Length: 65
Image 1: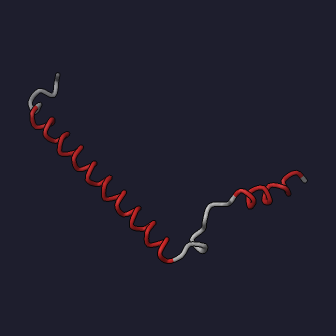
Image 2: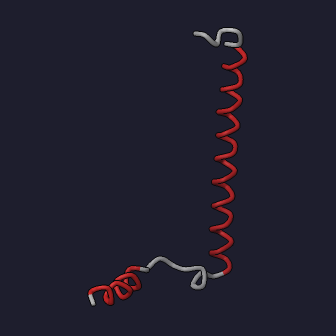
Image 3: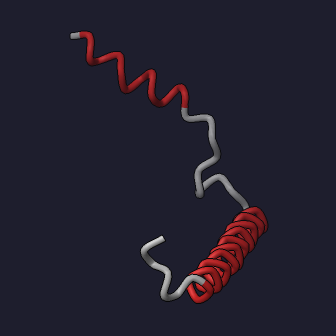
């Protein structure tokens, strides 16, 4: 019988806006922000891999260090 109170507790805490309560402009802004963040992550990953490849090339032949 204790489990019956759980669904009520869950629904009371869901104060974050769902996709149905957002306006199209808000959805567009969120999508733009997410795209910028993923693009930034891709750029950072590329920088890391370029650096890693450069180090790997410089130490080629010295793998037993």
